[in-house]
Structure formats: structure tokens, C-alpha cells
Length: 219
Image (cartoon, rainbow, N blue to C red; front, side):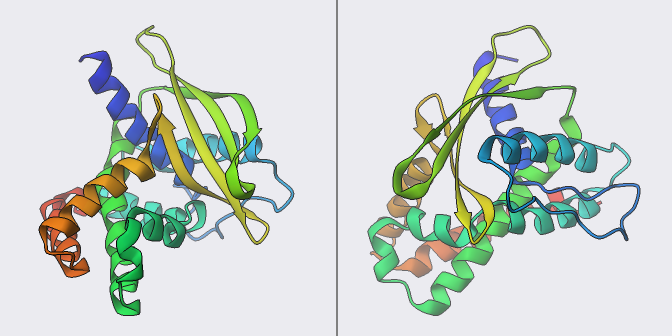
């Protein structure tokens, strides 16, 4: 596997790791612990990564169970409403309330179907927080290194987080100077433009993509 392919694979994996909050695979009925309100940004990233690995990498988990656990955790760990509005670019002003609600749901579903299954491939990779600095508009940027298991150089990833109330949420991920939000916005805006500027064209596209990945959440 090339370094580029490894990078893409583990970017996806650690996207899931950072979004996840602990759900013990051995005790499904146990209430889900959440991050403490006084937790700093570095601890948020480090603790969530550790807990998610423990929670979702059990090889005995079926895809459906893993996906549903991941979905619950995703809602706590990532600010989907904020990201959804930013990735629509200028077209967010054209979207109706109904279209925004559906888009947020489709975006969330797309993340679940794309990334939850990647926890099956975990093989001992780890992250190390190396820097935290202030970002724009009250955000914080946590720089981590992803250490692969084949001895290749670590991959540097920046997690952009902000607070919603007293809780941290992920709002962007930057890998090798490429922003997840910017990249997704360019793609989505292109789809909307090809569809004559209609948000519905993007909704159709996402419905189709999610349907194509349906097997990822089935046992």
C-alpha cells in the first residue's frame, strides 16, 4: 500500500476516532460518559481517541451495531449543523429550512456509512498531541501526529475545535494543508452549480451515495 493510500485510510480512521465518544462494547446498557466541561482541547482529542479505540474496534462487532454506536457518538463529537452550513458555501442562503434539515441528516449519514466501518481495520495506530494554538473566531487548533505501524514517518493532522456551550466539538480537519471543510465545500458547490443552482441536486446526489454505501452498515 502506498503512503498516499495509507494516509487517506488513516485520515478516515482518525476522523472517526476523534468524532467518537466512549460506548463500552462490553456494556451496551451502561450510560455513555461524555467529556467534562472543563476539559481542554488537547485532552478532548487525546481522550476521545483512546476511548473510541476501546469502544469501536472490537472485531466481533457487527457492522450495524458499530454504525449505530458511531452515529450516537458522532452527534456528540462533531458540530454537524455548523459544518453543514459552511460546506454549502454561498448556496446556504438559498436553502430552505426543510432543505437544511435534510442536508444535515444526509451529511451525518454519509459520515457514518463512510467511516464507521474503518474501525474494523484498526491495527495499533496511535496519535500524539504535539501542539495547541488559537484559531479564528474562538476556535482552537490541535495538531497531532498519527503514528503508523509500518515504521513510516508520522502523518500530521490538525483538528479544529470550538465550544458549543461548555463542550468541545470538531468543526474541521486539516491534513497536509488540505481542509476537510474546504474540500467538501468545493465538491458540493460544484454539484449544486451543475444542478442549476438548486440545493435539491445535492440532496439527490447524497441520497444516491448513501444508498451505494448501504452495505457498510449491514451485518
